[in-house]
Length: 178
Image (cartoon, rainbow, N blue to C red; front, side):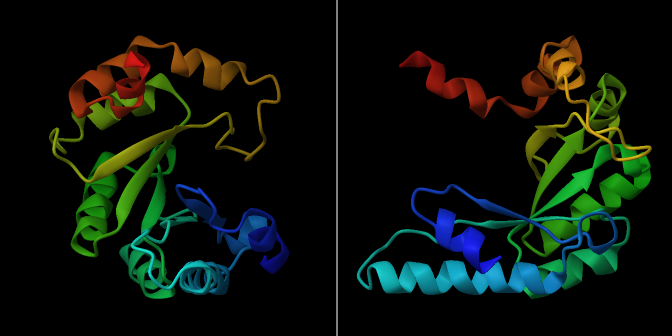
């Protein structure tokens, strides 16, 4: 973890994602805490007069229960990943509300058009606590990855993604005017 941080540091990094899922990826809550501390220390060491914000730490874990959000927030996370395919609509709505109350940003990971349509039907409203969407090429049944990338490409080109952009807003296209 320390070597990866030294390699990437926080130079022009908009955010740093820390995989803290112990079962599937060998991560821990301590990894989130270490990265938070390194980011804070690096920012202080680089320029004591700097007004630069410390890049946020995104905790990537399979979040199914509210207590996980509390633990991640206490560990130093600024944002969390919610896997749409692992949650019922009711649980998704509940977890986004709790995350918002903890001032954690929610990034939603989707793998299908069906999951994108669920976002639209979740009654979050256009001013929701969803701050971003990850289009994943991971199979949620066995966590294998579609090496061809076709699953993710098809989803990126889908009308369902366009509908979500239209509903929630589309910051990604704002830079296209240059």
